[in-house]
Length: 273
Image (tube, rainbow, N blue to C red; front, side, top):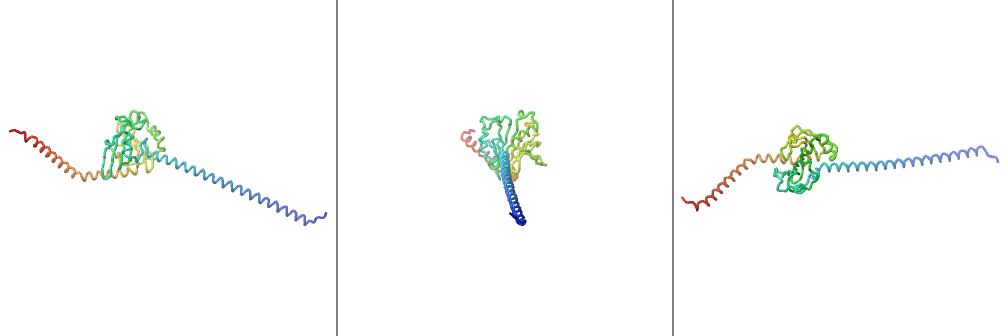
């Protein structure tokens, strides 16, 4: 059968079109698969990123929670709660200032006293002083027992404390010698610090011989309020000192007159010249 050259060219052209269309479809499918894989990969990366961020926030939250605690004592607790845990009677809580805010302190020596505390494993602790601002715990100052910490280096203490409070932070430097608000002990030389803007944990080596190491855990915003209130209380005490002295002398005079009158009423009927 006779076939014209034109028919052969037309057939070849149609064949090329089919091949090109097939190649185009294949490339389109490849792009779709590639885009799908990239989208899936990005979704997986996003999921992993969200999980990592959630874990980081969770760990950070736990660390922040730990910074506000010392053993069983949580900053912000009421006086009654600390009294219950330590076994110290509420009547033994000392009032440092009663205005403009109520500032109290509770001193606990775990190795002394007849009531058994609810806190285990306190052999390493010599004394803890708890500071309260308007019935809320804002500071815990721990003196460690000298014999229980004998031979321990600064690095040993830092390692032990870091296992609880995490990584150290750069210590804040003060030109003034720091003292505890609750009592007049000099804190000593700073060794290390942990914490954030809300809570601080500081380790000191006291200048006194009584103890080798001191740890102070503080709720910073509340401590700032307590320091301001304490400073104001000192000012008020100074302003009111003359009135208090005058009132004291007046009361003593009245007590003497009352005692003399009582003695007079007792002695006059039975006196014989």
